[in-house]
Image (cartoon, rainbow, N blue to C red; front, side, top):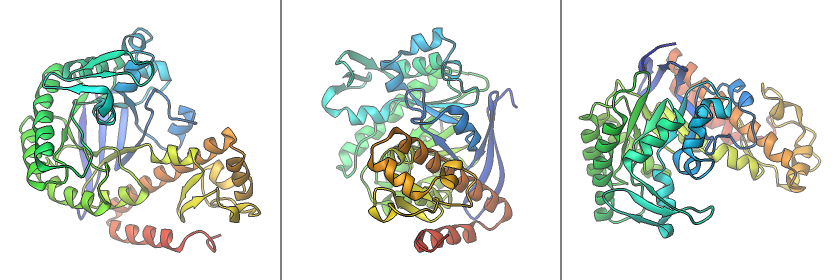
Length: 376
């Protein structure tokens, strides 16, 4: 393990990149999917299970952790790694996405944002400096600047205003972060679906010479083709020697297509949320366990899987658990989904190293298109 934060680009295949981020708490193999542990837990999973599936890093969230149990309390209890019993790297999201979600409960200005807690109505203020302070109290390894994310579609003037504000907040966040050996603060490229604004944001952030860069403000209402076009146009303006993180994305297909365009890191609640609602992601595509056709099906979701939840339980049993609203349904399907996501990322890493990423992408998409009816 490294005492410093480093990104090493191991191989490329087209625009797809295989790399490693090394930090004192561990190495993150990229392309990487980060399970979302919003409030210090990946819902319906033990963190030991998350690690065993191949996760090198998880995500925590400033907004939720500042509300409960409180960043200062987590610090007194040894930091988020100790608190959650996850001794490996953690990335913390600054709370910017939640600011967007709180449009009716907030007041935003140059200084930051004042908002009311969705939990009990208590008033809080989150500034770039306070966001970094909270992330330091949590002791996360990768910290995100505070930004303003807006839903699409939106008027150009509103997108530009939020982008420029996010750049000013990036400067303040970087100053508050300072020089922390072994850790990193990432800037967030904003600009909605307006390409020249995206480029302006990317170029201004690159000039700050940060340790990593993310693309924010996507998967917030726009079609996938718009997201991919933004990536195609924006990524060349982002430093190639630094890790590139696409925030809040997405489906397995989103991950596959975004890696093809040069993204290194992802996070999304989709695999855990889908699992809690009866939807499984597999190498055969999506399988909705609420569907009555599974009621008498003795097959597992995938008998070749290394994941016990995917391999050892019948579809009939999973269907029963889902329809009966049993907690075990969400546990098993979340386990299945995170296993598949990590398997997909591992497959992409191997394919990039072998110089066959295009073939891997085609084979994966063909398997999804065939579906699961005659697969086993």
